[in-house]
Amino acid sequence: MAVATGRLKLETQGGGQILEITPDILKQVAASKIQRGTVTIFLTGTTAGVGVMEMEPGTVKDLQAAMERLGPRGAAYQHNAMNAGETNGHSHLQASLFGQSLVVPIEGGKPMLGTWQRIIVMDFDSRPRTREIVVQTMGE
Image (cartoon, rainbow, N blue to C red):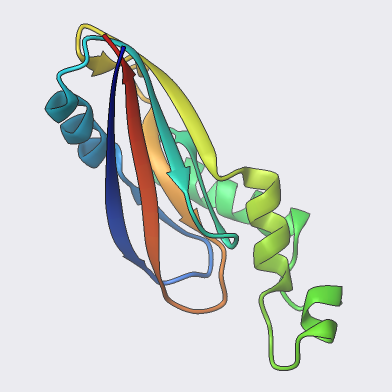
């Protein structure tokens, strides 16, 4: 079995921003030369997440609205109360619900994504950040 590990760096704005990283993942899988296996996409922070969605404007707005309903900005969060000056308690909650990792099968040297599936990063934080994503491809 072969393993290839790479990293992506992203500059994000927070506030529920959604960025598509599918092309970056495709490049890393191709560079790995792995034909059959899995690719794990792992975001190293605690106020953003990674997932799969259709990148259609209505779906983007629906997801942003849903995450806001689940962890609204401005609500009372213990994280903010216990850490003077923090305003991102909602970000930690939203990211925990969304998740920081994704595993996609690989066949024929390509991730087995459906027609409309795109790999995304969603940044929930209350300020811009530099994000690191670990991309680990395993297989044969």
